[in-house]
Image (cartoon, rainbow, N blue to C red; front, side):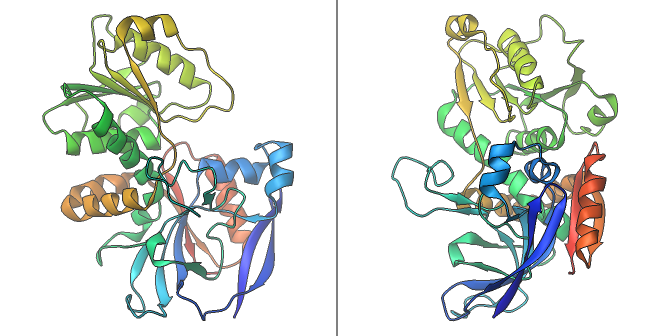
Length: 341
Protein backbone atom coordinates (compact mmCIF):
# COMPACT_ATOMS: atom_id res chain seq x y z
CA UNK A 1 0.00 0.00 0.00
CA UNK A 2 1.03 3.62 -0.53
CA UNK A 3 1.31 5.51 2.75
CA UNK A 4 1.37 9.31 2.90
CA UNK A 5 3.98 10.74 5.28
CA UNK A 6 3.90 14.42 6.24
CA UNK A 7 7.49 15.57 6.68
CA UNK A 8 9.20 18.72 7.81
CA UNK A 9 11.70 19.57 5.05
CA UNK A 10 12.96 22.88 6.47
CA UNK A 11 11.96 25.27 9.23
CA UNK A 12 8.18 25.85 9.11
CA UNK A 13 7.86 23.93 5.82
CA UNK A 14 5.98 20.62 5.52
CA UNK A 15 5.67 18.44 2.43
CA UNK A 16 3.90 15.19 1.62
CA UNK A 17 5.97 12.16 0.66
CA UNK A 18 4.87 8.68 -0.29
CA UNK A 19 6.16 5.36 1.02
CA UNK A 20 5.31 1.95 -0.37
CA UNK A 21 4.59 -0.29 2.62
CA UNK A 22 3.69 -3.97 2.57
CA UNK A 23 1.00 -5.21 4.94
CA UNK A 24 2.27 -8.75 4.56
CA UNK A 25 4.18 -8.74 7.83
CA UNK A 26 3.53 -9.11 11.56
CA UNK A 27 3.31 -5.35 12.08
CA UNK A 28 0.03 -3.80 13.20
CA UNK A 29 -1.38 -1.03 11.02
CA UNK A 30 -2.59 1.93 13.08
CA UNK A 31 -4.46 5.01 11.99
CA UNK A 32 -3.33 7.96 14.18
CA UNK A 33 -6.28 9.86 15.63
CA UNK A 34 -4.81 12.31 18.16
CA UNK A 35 -1.28 13.77 18.16
CA UNK A 36 0.32 16.04 20.75
CA UNK A 37 2.95 18.68 20.01
CA UNK A 38 6.10 18.51 22.14
CA UNK A 39 8.77 21.17 22.76
CA UNK A 40 11.27 18.94 20.92
CA UNK A 41 9.02 18.99 17.83
CA UNK A 42 8.90 22.76 18.08
CA UNK A 43 12.68 23.03 18.08
CA UNK A 44 12.72 21.25 14.72
CA UNK A 45 9.73 23.18 13.38
CA UNK A 46 11.23 26.59 14.22
CA UNK A 47 14.74 25.60 13.19
CA UNK A 48 16.20 26.25 16.64
CA UNK A 49 17.46 22.68 16.98
CA UNK A 50 20.72 23.78 15.36
CA UNK A 51 21.90 23.89 11.77
CA UNK A 52 23.86 20.62 11.91
CA UNK A 53 20.98 18.67 13.45
CA UNK A 54 18.52 20.11 10.94
CA UNK A 55 20.72 19.06 8.02
CA UNK A 56 21.31 15.61 9.44
CA UNK A 57 17.72 14.77 10.42
CA UNK A 58 15.47 16.47 7.87
CA UNK A 59 13.32 15.65 5.98
CA UNK A 60 11.48 13.97 8.86
CA UNK A 61 7.95 13.37 10.04
CA UNK A 62 7.39 15.01 13.44
CA UNK A 63 5.45 13.99 16.59
CA UNK A 64 6.30 11.25 19.08
CA UNK A 65 3.25 11.70 21.34
CA UNK A 66 0.23 10.04 19.82
CA UNK A 67 -2.60 7.53 19.91
CA UNK A 68 -4.65 5.81 17.27
CA UNK A 69 -6.93 2.96 16.29
CA UNK A 70 -6.03 -0.44 14.91
CA UNK A 71 -7.08 -0.89 11.28
CA UNK A 72 -5.32 -4.20 10.62
CA UNK A 73 -3.58 -6.79 12.76
CA UNK A 74 -2.23 -9.72 10.73
CA UNK A 75 -2.05 -11.87 13.86
CA UNK A 76 -5.67 -11.21 14.85
CA UNK A 77 -4.69 -10.37 18.44
CA UNK A 78 -6.16 -6.87 18.28
CA UNK A 79 -9.66 -6.08 17.02
CA UNK A 80 -10.17 -3.42 14.39
CA UNK A 81 -10.94 -0.12 16.12
CA UNK A 82 -8.96 -0.94 19.29
CA UNK A 83 -7.63 2.28 20.81
CA UNK A 84 -3.90 2.17 21.44
CA UNK A 85 -1.02 4.40 22.48
CA UNK A 86 2.01 4.19 20.23
CA UNK A 87 5.49 3.77 21.77
CA UNK A 88 7.98 6.02 19.90
CA UNK A 89 11.11 4.25 21.12
CA UNK A 90 12.27 1.50 18.74
CA UNK A 91 15.09 -0.61 20.19
CA UNK A 92 17.14 -2.80 17.87
CA UNK A 93 18.76 -4.90 20.62
CA UNK A 94 18.38 -5.79 24.29
CA UNK A 95 20.81 -5.41 27.18
CA UNK A 96 20.46 -6.99 30.64
CA UNK A 97 21.66 -3.83 32.39
CA UNK A 98 20.73 -0.90 30.13
CA UNK A 99 17.15 0.20 29.46
CA UNK A 100 15.87 0.35 25.89
CA UNK A 101 15.61 4.12 26.04
CA UNK A 102 19.32 4.47 26.90
CA UNK A 103 20.75 2.11 24.30
CA UNK A 104 22.62 4.19 21.75
CA UNK A 105 21.39 1.87 19.02
CA UNK A 106 17.70 2.57 19.70
CA UNK A 107 15.73 4.71 17.28
CA UNK A 108 13.29 7.34 18.45
CA UNK A 109 10.47 8.73 16.38
CA UNK A 110 10.64 12.41 15.40
CA UNK A 111 14.35 12.42 16.26
CA UNK A 112 16.10 11.30 13.08
CA UNK A 113 13.37 8.75 12.45
CA UNK A 114 9.88 9.42 11.06
CA UNK A 115 7.31 10.28 13.72
CA UNK A 116 3.55 9.77 13.79
CA UNK A 117 2.49 12.41 11.24
CA UNK A 118 1.46 9.76 8.72
CA UNK A 119 -1.74 8.34 7.30
CA UNK A 120 -0.86 4.99 8.85
CA UNK A 121 1.80 3.86 11.31
CA UNK A 122 3.21 0.31 11.21
CA UNK A 123 4.31 -1.05 14.58
CA UNK A 124 5.25 -4.41 16.10
CA UNK A 125 3.04 -5.59 18.96
CA UNK A 126 5.60 -4.67 21.63
CA UNK A 127 5.37 -1.00 20.58
CA UNK A 128 1.62 -0.85 21.19
CA UNK A 129 -0.24 -0.50 24.50
CA UNK A 130 -3.99 -1.02 24.56
CA UNK A 131 -5.96 1.85 26.13
CA UNK A 132 -9.08 1.63 28.30
CA UNK A 133 -12.24 1.84 26.17
CA UNK A 134 -13.50 4.97 27.97
CA UNK A 135 -10.15 6.78 27.84
CA UNK A 136 -10.23 10.49 26.96
CA UNK A 137 -8.20 10.48 23.76
CA UNK A 138 -7.09 14.10 24.10
CA UNK A 139 -5.40 13.12 27.38
CA UNK A 140 -4.14 9.82 25.98
CA UNK A 141 -2.45 11.78 23.18
CA UNK A 142 0.26 13.06 25.54
CA UNK A 143 0.73 9.76 27.39
CA UNK A 144 4.37 9.72 26.26
CA UNK A 145 5.01 12.82 28.39
CA UNK A 146 3.37 11.10 31.37
CA UNK A 147 5.59 8.05 30.82
CA UNK A 148 8.68 10.23 31.20
CA UNK A 149 7.56 11.09 34.73
CA UNK A 150 6.60 7.47 35.42
CA UNK A 151 9.99 6.28 34.19
CA UNK A 152 11.78 8.77 36.45
CA UNK A 153 9.79 7.71 39.51
CA UNK A 154 10.29 4.02 38.72
CA UNK A 155 14.04 4.57 38.73
CA UNK A 156 13.76 6.67 41.89
CA UNK A 157 11.91 3.87 43.69
CA UNK A 158 14.75 1.45 42.97
CA UNK A 159 17.61 3.73 43.99
CA UNK A 160 16.50 6.22 46.67
CA UNK A 161 16.48 5.64 50.42
CA UNK A 162 13.12 4.91 52.03
CA UNK A 163 12.57 8.16 53.93
CA UNK A 164 10.04 9.76 51.64
CA UNK A 165 8.12 12.14 53.85
CA UNK A 166 8.65 15.26 51.73
CA UNK A 167 9.19 15.82 48.00
CA UNK A 168 10.08 19.02 46.21
CA UNK A 169 9.40 19.55 42.51
CA UNK A 170 11.03 22.48 40.71
CA UNK A 171 9.32 23.64 37.51
CA UNK A 172 5.70 24.77 37.16
CA UNK A 173 5.17 23.59 33.58
CA UNK A 174 3.40 20.55 32.15
CA UNK A 175 6.01 18.02 33.30
CA UNK A 176 6.16 19.49 36.81
CA UNK A 177 2.38 19.22 37.02
CA UNK A 178 2.45 15.56 36.00
CA UNK A 179 5.28 14.68 38.41
CA UNK A 180 3.48 16.34 41.33
CA UNK A 181 0.25 14.55 40.48
CA UNK A 182 1.94 11.15 40.34
CA UNK A 183 3.82 11.76 43.59
CA UNK A 184 0.56 12.56 45.40
CA UNK A 185 -1.04 9.39 44.04
CA UNK A 186 1.93 7.07 44.58
CA UNK A 187 2.88 8.54 47.98
CA UNK A 188 -0.40 9.76 49.48
CA UNK A 189 1.10 10.12 52.99
CA UNK A 190 3.98 12.31 51.80
CA UNK A 191 4.05 16.07 51.45
CA UNK A 192 4.64 17.41 47.96
CA UNK A 193 5.84 20.99 47.38
CA UNK A 194 5.86 22.64 43.96
CA UNK A 195 8.41 25.41 43.40
CA UNK A 196 7.79 27.76 40.50
CA UNK A 197 7.89 31.36 39.36
CA UNK A 198 4.55 31.93 37.62
CA UNK A 199 1.51 32.58 39.80
CA UNK A 200 -1.24 31.47 37.40
CA UNK A 201 0.61 28.23 36.70
CA UNK A 202 1.12 27.49 40.38
CA UNK A 203 -2.63 27.98 40.86
CA UNK A 204 -3.20 24.88 38.72
CA UNK A 205 -1.46 22.68 41.31
CA UNK A 206 -4.50 22.40 43.55
CA UNK A 207 -3.61 18.90 44.77
CA UNK A 208 -0.14 19.63 46.23
CA UNK A 209 0.50 20.42 49.88
CA UNK A 210 2.01 23.81 49.13
CA UNK A 211 2.94 25.93 46.11
CA UNK A 212 5.99 28.13 46.70
CA UNK A 213 7.47 30.93 44.62
CA UNK A 214 11.17 30.31 43.94
CA UNK A 215 12.05 33.82 45.14
CA UNK A 216 10.25 33.29 48.46
CA UNK A 217 11.40 29.90 49.79
CA UNK A 218 11.57 29.73 53.61
CA UNK A 219 15.18 29.29 54.69
CA UNK A 220 14.33 26.48 57.11
CA UNK A 221 12.31 24.42 54.60
CA UNK A 222 13.85 21.02 53.89
CA UNK A 223 12.87 18.09 51.67
CA UNK A 224 13.90 14.45 51.50
CA UNK A 225 14.06 14.17 47.70
CA UNK A 226 13.68 16.49 44.71
CA UNK A 227 12.73 16.36 41.05
CA UNK A 228 14.00 19.07 38.72
CA UNK A 229 11.63 19.79 35.82
CA UNK A 230 12.69 23.35 35.02
CA UNK A 231 14.91 22.78 32.00
CA UNK A 232 16.83 25.36 29.98
CA UNK A 233 18.59 28.13 31.84
CA UNK A 234 16.30 27.50 34.80
CA UNK A 235 17.93 24.13 35.43
CA UNK A 236 20.99 25.69 37.06
CA UNK A 237 18.98 27.84 39.47
CA UNK A 238 16.67 24.94 40.28
CA UNK A 239 19.56 22.58 41.06
CA UNK A 240 21.20 25.28 43.16
CA UNK A 241 18.06 25.70 45.28
CA UNK A 242 17.52 21.95 45.53
CA UNK A 243 21.04 21.43 46.90
CA UNK A 244 20.40 24.17 49.47
CA UNK A 245 17.12 22.68 50.74
CA UNK A 246 17.49 18.91 50.35
CA UNK A 247 18.33 16.73 53.36
CA UNK A 248 21.59 14.74 53.46
CA UNK A 249 21.70 11.63 51.27
CA UNK A 250 18.64 12.73 49.33
CA UNK A 251 18.15 12.01 45.66
CA UNK A 252 17.97 14.74 43.02
CA UNK A 253 16.13 13.50 39.92
CA UNK A 254 17.06 15.53 36.84
CA UNK A 255 14.38 15.76 34.13
CA UNK A 256 14.71 19.25 32.67
CA UNK A 257 16.58 19.38 29.36
CA UNK A 258 19.19 22.13 29.04
CA UNK A 259 20.81 22.91 25.69
CA UNK A 260 23.93 24.20 27.43
CA UNK A 261 26.06 22.92 30.35
CA UNK A 262 25.11 24.20 33.79
CA UNK A 263 27.17 24.77 36.93
CA UNK A 264 26.61 22.44 39.88
CA UNK A 265 27.82 23.06 43.44
CA UNK A 266 29.68 19.76 43.73
CA UNK A 267 31.14 20.76 47.12
CA UNK A 268 27.67 20.58 48.71
CA UNK A 269 26.75 17.49 46.67
CA UNK A 270 29.73 15.78 48.30
CA UNK A 271 29.15 17.26 51.74
CA UNK A 272 25.52 16.09 51.81
CA UNK A 273 26.21 12.80 50.07
CA UNK A 274 23.58 13.49 47.42
CA UNK A 275 22.70 11.28 44.47
CA UNK A 276 22.03 12.93 41.10
CA UNK A 277 19.83 10.73 38.91
CA UNK A 278 19.32 11.59 35.26
CA UNK A 279 16.33 10.22 33.35
CA UNK A 280 15.40 10.56 29.70
CA UNK A 281 12.54 9.29 27.59
CA UNK A 282 10.88 5.98 28.47
CA UNK A 283 10.30 2.42 27.34
CA UNK A 284 7.38 0.10 26.68
CA UNK A 285 7.24 -1.00 30.34
CA UNK A 286 6.75 2.63 31.38
CA UNK A 287 3.86 2.97 28.93
CA UNK A 288 2.22 -0.14 30.38
CA UNK A 289 2.62 1.14 33.95
CA UNK A 290 1.17 4.49 32.93
CA UNK A 291 -1.90 2.89 31.33
CA UNK A 292 -2.30 0.75 34.47
CA UNK A 293 -2.37 3.96 36.52
CA UNK A 294 -5.06 5.33 34.19
CA UNK A 295 -7.14 2.21 34.85
CA UNK A 296 -6.57 1.96 38.59
CA UNK A 297 -6.79 5.68 39.40
CA UNK A 298 -9.20 7.34 36.93
CA UNK A 299 -8.98 10.58 38.90
CA UNK A 300 -5.46 10.93 37.48
CA UNK A 301 -6.97 11.20 34.00
CA UNK A 302 -9.39 13.85 35.28
CA UNK A 303 -6.51 15.94 36.62
CA UNK A 304 -4.50 15.44 33.43
CA UNK A 305 -7.41 16.84 31.42
CA UNK A 306 -6.41 20.22 32.90
CA UNK A 307 -3.39 20.04 30.59
CA UNK A 308 -5.50 19.92 27.43
CA UNK A 309 -4.80 23.24 25.76
CA UNK A 310 -5.88 24.06 22.23
CA UNK A 311 -7.37 21.23 20.15
CA UNK A 312 -7.13 21.49 16.35
CA UNK A 313 -8.94 19.46 13.70
CA UNK A 314 -6.26 18.72 11.11
CA UNK A 315 -7.68 18.07 7.65
CA UNK A 316 -4.89 19.57 5.53
CA UNK A 317 -1.22 20.53 5.90
CA UNK A 318 -2.01 24.19 6.58
CA UNK A 319 -3.92 23.05 9.68
CA UNK A 320 -0.70 21.46 10.97
CA UNK A 321 1.14 24.75 10.49
CA UNK A 322 -1.62 26.64 12.30
CA UNK A 323 -1.45 24.22 15.23
CA UNK A 324 2.35 24.55 15.53
CA UNK A 325 2.24 28.34 15.26
CA UNK A 326 -0.47 28.59 17.91
CA UNK A 327 1.41 26.23 20.22
CA UNK A 328 4.37 28.62 20.23
CA UNK A 329 2.32 31.16 22.16
CA UNK A 330 0.67 28.60 24.43
CA UNK A 331 2.15 29.03 27.92
CA UNK A 332 0.16 26.26 29.62
CA UNK A 333 -1.07 22.87 28.56
CA UNK A 334 -0.62 20.69 25.50
CA UNK A 335 -1.69 21.45 21.94
CA UNK A 336 -3.56 18.47 20.51
CA UNK A 337 -4.17 17.72 16.83
CA UNK A 338 -7.18 15.58 15.92
CA UNK A 339 -5.61 13.77 12.98
CA UNK A 340 -8.28 13.85 10.27
CA UNK A 341 -6.02 14.53 7.28
